[in-house]
Length: 243
Length: 156
Image (cartoon, rainbow over all chains, first blue to last red; front, side, top):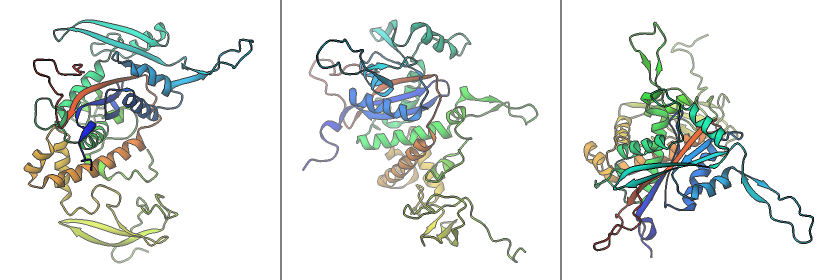
């Protein structure tokens, strides 16, 4: 009999994450291998979070699987124009939606240090993607660039707040299932419970000594109000709520 | 006219948790009425009955606190420690409970949180999404051959 936790489930594993930079919402955090199937699962989860007519720009590292699964999740079928010749008509092909944008950021390293950053646009027009990337301002107020800085910073938070992902410790996961559970719980806490400092809003004048009002990523995305951990755990998700 | 001990409470924010019931998950159906209380430690838990299907349930039904005898504060503390970087074993030692107990709490909390996330995070209109993958390992680190680099040397 095969023992649980043996075989392919142990050893190197990858945590896949998707973040919305404008509101710091963690859209998905999943455990998998570094292959096409895991990328597909991630993008399907992201697709579920988005409205039907929404076409955001995606940015990632240079892993080739993303372009493939983005086409699957966000592509549209196009029937080739008939050639007028004899024979079987060509099969329909999947093409990216005209509004879908996808850019890759490839960092070249030498002895662990970044020496060059290559930005390449895979889907969408250059002008459109650059304009949309510029709209998300940097912390110093300058125009934004195509980047993966937000998700890289998010990776650091993941490592900081999940003992299982901390390097060089003995708190590593013993099963993938438990790691996925920890990620599910952490994701909900990070989205609904923990206020994010960069999202804070100025308090209205005359409301008291506090200058700022805390805001969570879910508040910034317009989903709910500030929750405690107890609120999260007592939320009745099976009831039709006013949210 | 109000009764001697106050007005009879109307539980408009409670719904029947029985999936087979016709009023399952419906607020304000008028079918759910109070059916007593009981104590878990010093906390009072209210019991309800659904007049439609006869199901008796309490205010903790379909939450991670269902069937738990541990004080709620202790469970919340354990979960807070887990999302602040402490390990399962560390949490179990700090709170003087068994490892499997903490694992059980995490399992329940994770299932509930995932369901809440699925229910609330949808139909978002976002302008950008960034995706990445993060190296980690389960149970054992990548094998390092004698005198060589670890295989799969790419690190996010």
